[in-house]
Amino acid sequence: MGKQSEGRRLIEDYLGRRARVYSQEKAVLADVLPPGRLAWEDEEALDELASLARTAGVDVVARLVQRREHPHPSTFVGKGKAEQLAQLAREHGAQVAVMGSELSPAQERNLEQATGLKIVDRSQVILDIFAQRAGTREAELSVELAQLEYLLPRLRGWGEALTDPGGGIGTRGPGETRLESDRRHAQRRIQSIKRQLQELDKVRSVRRKKRRGSGTPEIAIIGYTNSGKSTLFRRLTGADSLIEDKLFATLDTRVRSLELPGGGRPVAADTVGFIRKLPHQLIPAFRATTESTQEASLLLNVLDASSPHVLEHYATVHEVLAEQMLGDDQPWPPVLHVLNKIDAVQSPEQQSLLDRARAEIHPRVCVSAKTGRGLKELRHSIAAMLDSQFAHLVVRIPWDRQELISWLAELGKLELLPDTESLRARVTVPSAQVPRIRGVSGITVLEPSS
Ligand SMILES: Nc1nc2c(ncn2[C@@H]2O[C@H](COP(=O)(O)OP(=O)(O)OP(=O)(O)O)[C@@H](O)[C@H]2O)c(=O)[nH]1
Ligand SMILES: [Mg+2]
Image 1: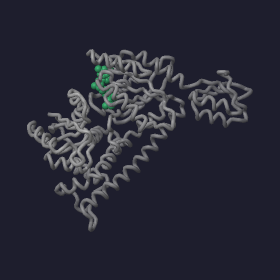
Image 2: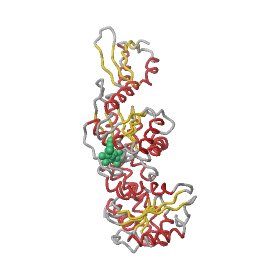
Image 3: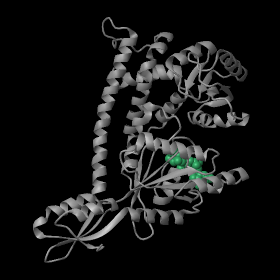
Image 4: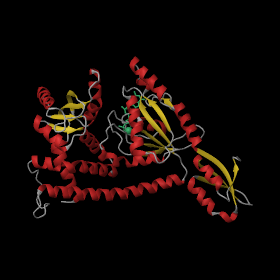
């Protein structure tokens, strides 16, 4: 059996039988939340989990919340709550419990024993959605890698509890237990995927360099999952991008050019959505999104202004940017917040939340990517923010300092102007580079003159 199919087999055997949720399977949702919230918040707290479960294809039949400071160390929910969970599942004919947090392998095993239900945690549901939706080789490899890494620490418990899933003949070395050989296969496959991803990274970075060399500014359209990024991307660029009322419709970044008032033609990238409590194994799957974010001249953060969670989403996006994408050691690209779906803001509650968001979030524009409302203003704001990012200079360089021309060309866009006495060029560079250029002896900045 080839390495690849062996890796897949492991995922199928373990995640498949034990953890993966199948369409039409009935499930109860459950989570442990800190005490001291209002009753109606319980329902809402599980809304996102319900969307995740539905996106993965599950039929959600009931919800259960336990209020406690910390999850139970061995069974996640307390003993009494575990019984209640089993009871609730029986009443609704469900065989699966989808948990709102990531459980430790032991918690999962113990809760499974206590309830007789198949226990699926939040991370598995997200991994499953990514696996179902991965459309390119890079996305497929990234997800398989994440699944294997999720799987490795869980092989023991699942392996022991399962009857031999078969397919192991000839794959086991002499004196090796099933668990050891599975672990070895998983580790090998992980190494092989990592190598393949490195190759793909190279291809992408060459493409990126080419784009940067042409001096074209890049806008990264980022934001919480399902906020309308792809819809906006489509509106702005005219490209067709998969749009669905599901979480994680987009799993690959895409780049297209767009036209701005004033004639600017930057490119925009549609990216993978963020989510609260993203399984850490999936962070590498966001590589392309991370790069787009880091290299962008401007970030458009798309927010669903009709969601009761819009302010939480705003906070999560900031967290993901700070902790996973941009960090503190480099200056962030400027961010323009796009309060989207304003056509769907109808109830007084939604309206007052939108008012709060408008007061708290800056700079921002309100749009409806669906109806087109506010898009003209958005294009103007983009043009203005990009403009302040770039400076247009005319420089003079002596004939014997031609190397300075190539240096400038690396910083941005360069166009030679006809001249006989010296080299003269019009350059467009990031504003941050201007002091540096002015400081180089041999370069005389003619325009703007101060
Ligand atoms: N009412 C309304 N719905 C919108 C608007 N923009 C997007 N939607 C809907 O919101 C859902 C998600 O849209 P997408 O564009 O796929 O969102 P996304 O942010 O790309 O989602 P992911 O790729 O899954 O992270 C779809 O059902 C869209 O039709 C809008 O301005 N108004
Ligand atoms: Mg999308």
